[in-house]
Amino acid sequence: MPLTIRTKAATHHFTVEVAATPEQQERGLMFRHRLPGDRGMIFPYDPPQDVSFWMKNTLIPLDIVFIRSDGTIVRITKAEPMDLSPLPAGEPVAAVLEIRGGRAAELGIREGDVVSWPR
Image (cartoon, rainbow, N blue to C red; front, side):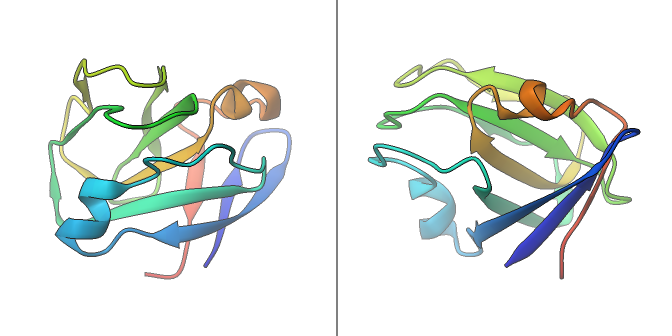
């Protein structure tokens, strides 16, 4: 599925997998050995929820992007491989996006930028 992130400087395009079911959400990007820079996975929540993520069995570093109902990014967290520490959203979110670790910084993606995807 296509997904875009609008920053102050540019619009960035990604192709993302959707983790729609509880089973898909539990597995996420576990056991993957690489993730291209224009790929990711989105975890939608309806209604919005205050969620936490962890990196159990995740072999690559990820940026975890927490997204409000209006599409604005509330928080970006750097997640290290195999780390079991909870990474909380801090407030109810409508979606969480996982992209390759460090990619948000590379593209200048920040809190307050806007994410859009077909819902």
